[in-house]
Length: 241
Image 1 (tube, one colour):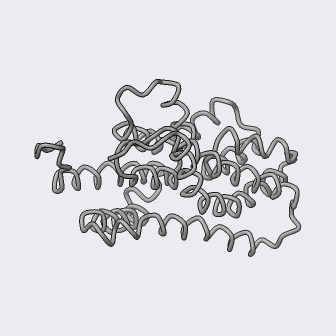
Image 2 (cartoon, helix red, strand yellow):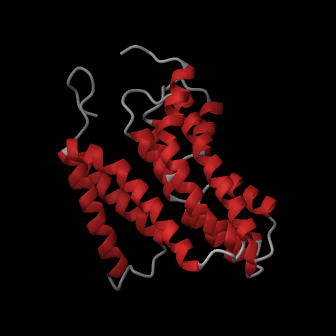
Image 3 (cartoon, helix red, strand yellow):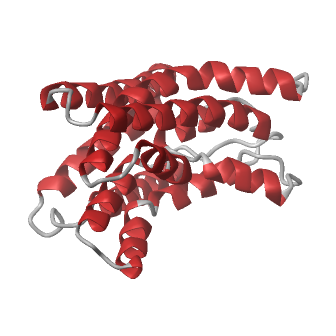
C-alpha cells in the first residue's frame, strides 16, 4: 500500500471529521447554555470545551462548579467518567507506528472521543497522526463553537429543542458503526452484544447504580475480550495476535 503524505492524511481527517463537527456543534449547545446558567461567560464556556472535549465530563464538571465542590471532588468525578478513554487510547496505540514520537501520541490522545475513536480504529492500515489531527481539528472546532454560541443563546432556545439536538450525537455514532457491522459478522455481533450488556447493566439491581462511565468500561472489557478470543486478528504471515 502506497504511503500517503501528511497533507493527504490531514485532508482525509478533515473529511471524516466533518460530520462529527456538525453533531458536536448541535450537542455542545446544551453545554453552553448550562455553563451560562451558572454565570460562566461565553469565553469561559468555550475554554471549558477546548480543554476537556467530553460531554458527560463537562456536564458533571459544571454541576460540581455550581455546587461549589472542591478540586479533589472535580478530579475524582472526571477520572471516573472519562476512564473509558484510557481503554480507547490503549486500542489506538496498537494502530500507530511503534516508532511514533511521544509528542504525536500526546496530540492524538488529546482528541480521543467516542466518535473520533470510531473513525480512527476503523481506518485501514497504520493510523497517521496527521489523519487524527485533521479529524480532531474540525471536530473540536465544532465542539468549541457550539459551546460558545450556546452560552450566547443562554436560555433563549426552548429546552425541547436542546434535547432534540442531542439526538444528533447518537445518530452520528450509529452512522460510524453500521457500515463495518454490515461487512463483518464479528463486528455486528460485538455491537449487538455490547448493546444488550449495557441494557442489562442499566437495569440490573446489583449494578444499575454504577456510573455510566463505569458501566461502559465493564461492557468494553468483557465484550472486547470475548470477541478477541472468538475472532482473533490474523497478522501478516498467518499467525494470530
